[in-house]
Image 1: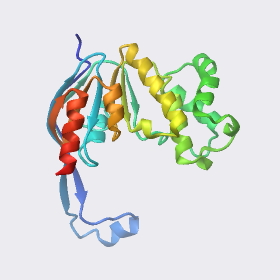
Image 2: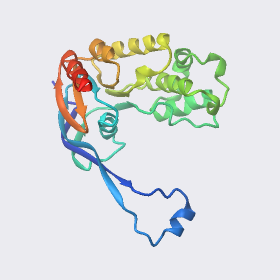
Image 3: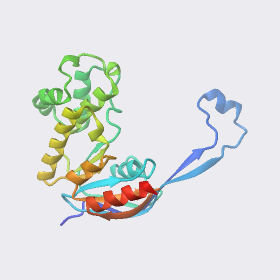
Image 4: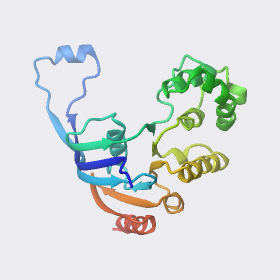
Length: 244
């Protein structure tokens, strides 16, 4: 069995400034004052392998390093130490909707974002109605995205991104999008990918989703990988840690 994701001794450290300087004026006024920083270790010496066809759940408190791990795998962040080796095309479902152009309409953003995902003009035309229907925005196609609610943006972003023909899907709280009906549609998409043998990493606080969808799970705590195993075992261990 192939290993599309191989992670060895992975660490990520961010430098957090003690003092904010948001404007050019603030930087000029304090140019002679040396900036000081505090280091934040988002991930610490994490090693794991993801096999082809694995549906992996990642659990942990906010700030435990889950999203940082996905961004390192996606190539959005560079490791401070260690290595990430990825074999296959990635579709990152991270910060859904952040790439939309606010002054463009939903119709225009569908074309732009689908093109960035690698879809041809013919494929976009073929899938356009399905994207619109799945996102449930038929009456808002010619409305500028800046007038969409956060939920509408996330629904549309998911609807576009799911059309990417990828080998690996990185999903950060995507099942928190929309109402119960929309979440059921998203679950059906995950089940389809699962049957197709896609490799999926899912970050979620919903323990039932981890148990129902995933084939294995990992538990991150304060940037460290503390456990890996069956979804039921890892979810139970995570809940026990919350009770401490």
